[in-house]
Image 1 (cartoon, rainbow, N blue to C red):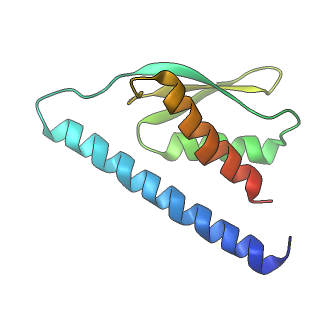
Image 2 (tube, rainbow, N blue to C red):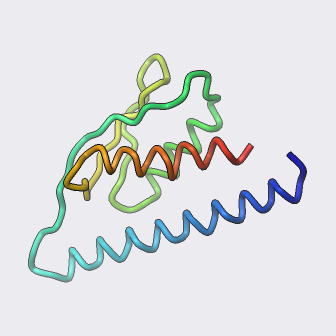
Length: 112
């Protein structure tokens, strides 16, 4: 992968991540400002690919933790599962897991 395509990949990822942070902050602000509690908290396990390096695991877990409403709690001993606390679980838990898998894990893997 050449430098211009790497830079373009990082720019796309940065745009995606900035959008995620803004959406999450607005969701939490709305929840704080309205009388109804909209949270649906829970723990989920996020599968990680085998052989994922320390740097990528750290990047994925930190990106998830820095997004308001999500928190990385623990990495399994075999380094294949990340335990997460989610403040706003979707009705179908699998939708939340798929969103994180596709938009965090897969995007980080594509960064090269």
